[in-house]
Image (cartoon, rainbow, N blue to C red; front, side, top):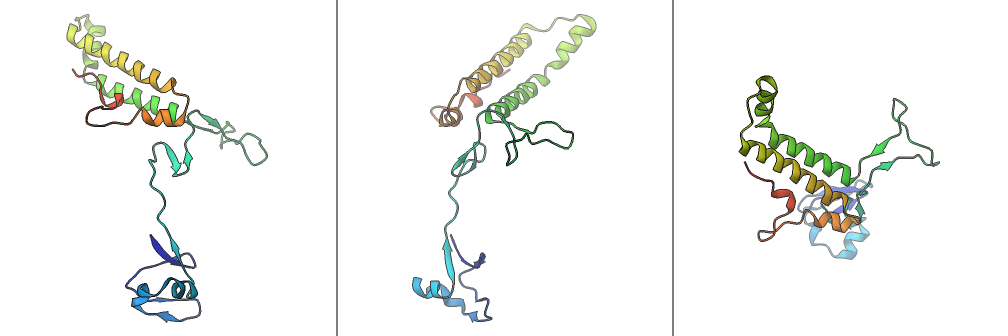
Amino acid sequence: MAWNYNNRVIREGRSWTDDNGVTHPTNWGSWSESEKAAAGLVFVADPAPFDSRFFWDANTPKSLDDVTEVDENGDPLLDEDGNQVVTKGLKSTFKSQVKIQAGGLLQDTDWYVIRKADDGTAIPIDVSNYRSSIRAYSGYLEGLIDGVAEHSAFVALFDSTEDSPSAFSQWPEA
């Protein structure tokens, strides 16, 4: 919350100068609402909080699906290479994050797979089971994401409490 004068933030406890060159005292914060208004001060409330993972601002949810961008005439918006500009939706973005997380979890055991390919040494069953469980869980999470049709339901996928953690925080452990 702040007081503004001509889109300039005015801090309480500090003097300020208006466009007519009048310097107002440091105690201007004690003025009445009408005195502040007469001096040209406007109170601006802080913007409403929002989760930037899911919203552009407090009132604008991000699209669930990818959006092909168009200009003001409805013509395709093209990038510098002449390709249609596509803004990734929440589903694409979060499925990509799931894939990255799964890849990171598999990375520590990739050497077993490489060794198997190089010289035929068997992958230990616990490692093989772990890798299978990571891939299965990744597929499960992507299915949850794909199955959502409404923005509020998508956001709810990530709700987590101490008693009920989000599925996205329950990856299998080695």
